[in-house]
Length: 116
Length: 116
Image (cartoon, rainbow over all chains, first blue to last red; front, top):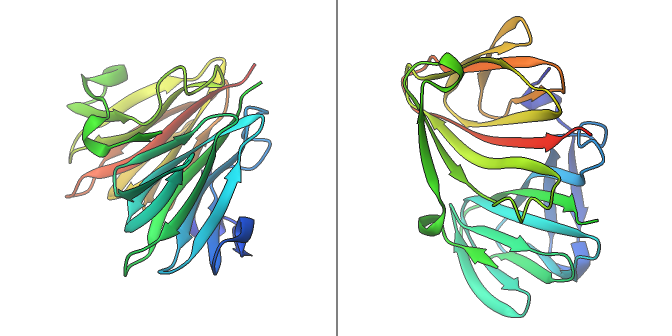
């Protein structure tokens, strides 16, 4: 089946995990299509200055694949700059945050797969 | 952990499922990081005129999320044009193909999750 760009569900969440501003997330698959293997597959956008706060993953692992922009990631305790083409893999039990530290939108694919 | 763009493994496959030319695939996660939930999470590129032939999925479901370019997808028997922002979801038991029918690279995220 085809899901056109304009048909996808976009949600805006404020101060996610204590972060700044909003994260704009477009869901690429719904829970049925994720087939019990995960709980999120989305195209996310953080506008300049916006962030998702530091939080731990328990029972699942999250991947960020950076599409556009520049950001600062706290990768389980280590601060690293990220840009297009970089992958941030946060394993079960690890923590992360991400902030748009650039002047254009920071866009990334987010995938959360269950670990058990 | 961070995997820098330059560290990711890129594979080039010719005539995939009888398609034309090559598909260039950069693996975003390895099998361990997929945690048994799937077998592919990649950023794929088809140059103009290149394609992946029509094939069926058995035991898994594949999603294409179009990032750039224009293509023609055979979505389980129905031909549809796709462009950036469109999602092609091929469920377990269904078939698909994808061809770059434009003049720039066709880029997409491919995700294969197991169905059982």
